[in-house]
Image (cartoon, rainbow, N blue to C red):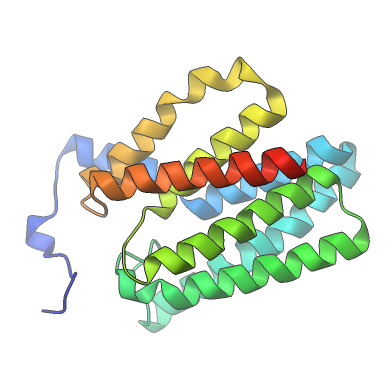
Amino acid sequence: MWRGRRDPSRRPTGAATRVARWVTEVTAPAVLVTGLTVLIGWHGAGGLRGLGWGLLATVFAAGVPCAYILGGVRRGRLTDRHIGRREQRRVPLLLGLASAAAGLALLVLLGAPRALLALVTAGVVGLVVAVSVSHWWKMSIHAAVAAGTLVVLMLTFGPRLLPAVPLLGLVGWSRVRLRDHTVAQVVVGALVGGLVAGLVFGTLS
């Protein structure tokens, strides 16, 4: 048995586990990044133009990495679409970083809205951190993206979104419940994601 492999017989079961799986799927990084990018694009430019900017950014921020991961799962190179094994994360994260950086360069060249550029830049910085940390520790990307999403939304739409903060705890609980992460990995992921979003997006937007 390779190091870090989970024994299916020890996986949790029951109604709580089903809820945890649902939460994990709904709050998957690709899902949150897609929704947030489209929303910020629309908010930054408005109307169909803003929607177009958001969709273009989404191709690089989520579409390309997601396609690579799904292809890796189908070919057996990756164990699952959430990349549960730490040692498998490096290449997908590096590809995601390259894709986001290329998308950022294109958006700058085309004159995308400032808020969207700030969001993609925050994503690039977050991926640099994730690539570095994943070399030796399995930080929760779910928690990082969820926290970053929440911070970006609050910076954009104001404190009216504060009641959504407990949802971040729900994301963390789902990852721990499924035994995909420890509490420490979830907490650190949330802190890193929130900090990067606050500093980078908050400064540049």
